[in-house]
Image (cartoon, rainbow, N blue to C red; front, side, top):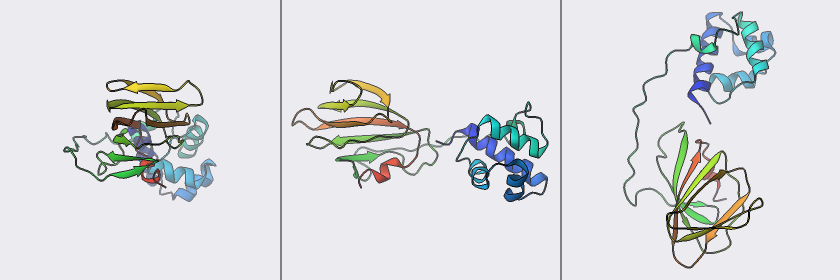
Length: 195
């Protein structure tokens, strides 16, 4: 997930590197930090370990006590929004189920909201990036994990869990089961769930 802090640090490193007239390759050679890591940092796609921060600061001849963020421009104002009307959006395969992903046109979201319609069957075992919040809107769902006993969730019930825990969902009855699922981050994970 790209945080504003990660994006600002990347902008700051780029600004400092360019002020010295260096290429990414030159900064990589001077700092010992791999070129691919520096590129991802500058694009706001990766954060750094403390050791790499120290190496970059040493190469750029800046005091690590002075935050890289002091060299970053202030974040742009964020007044974006996405309105999702009832029944709008494509129905996409998501494991064994069908999902409508909200705000697909917004990039770098802090979370991904989805309306999930559970299909009959046992459900496909899966993991998700980040943390997951599930709220049962209609029907009744069963959540299975290797860590806990199966959990029955009725309409109005909700659960928050670590998406890295292998789990599977399926309806607990023949009634249509619809869930609001919110997953932290915007990794596009839902694009590959149908395969």
